[in-house]
Length: 355
Ligand SMILES: [Mg+2]
Image (cartoon, helix red, strand yellow):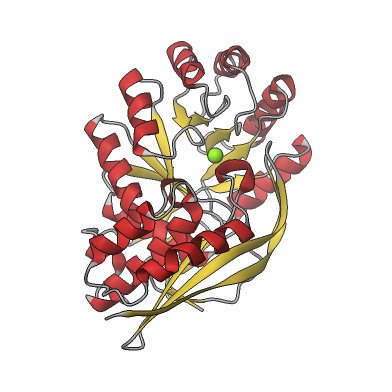
């Protein structure tokens, strides 16, 4: 199975409602689909959504990075899989979302060539998953309305986007928590919006009011590793690192310092599936559980994340893969079942999503 061609095309899909965090506001999904065709006619699909505020990539830079790597992959056999992954990671530095999109298509082809679903190829067994859903940052009344709507759709875990201003955030969280049944699990994501001192005072204030979230995600700027540690030492609420961890090296530093309780793995940050698996394995060594998260991206890359979660189900105990649920519609064919909070992997070979 030789690689004959690699092309990219943009995927546009409308969102049900705008996605708002402390870093950005998005009204529609626009991401890049990678299509790799082999000489026997088989086709692998990959995908990635540029998130300039987080990975530094744009649609143009992703397409250019993929175009730059492509000549090194053309004519190579899918069976030389480790060589292909080495090429993806060593032809160019950074560009993690572009690399992830390419890797996903290669893994799709590799699993198809072995005639097994990707999760099985990776040693996984679990097929049924539950994700949380994001409640965008906005006026408190609107956030409560969105949260109640999510519960009515069957979600029992909500990811609340905050990080605008600590005082306003504290009152938002209190009002939201009071409006919801106690059984609902709240994940707080401040997207780097607070200082370490603000984080501690806000979280202690919530804790004193009986509100202990499942975790606080990335309260401080990505490079403030000491800040994460400072917070973890002073609050009951577990601390989860997102933007602070792209590479194994980033994770190792945090794990050695015992700076966080959990790590959020995203394929767009690790550069794809191979490093995501390695990152989960590294966390397992330290006894740290992970969440598998996503950017605002489409069904191919979200499905790839679910296959990874299946392959490392002991370590990846939380899913934040709601991107498909946020879409009003999309033009792809999916054997992966996305049904609001439920995601079910199919028995078909490969990833199970195609153009
Ligand atoms: Mg996050």
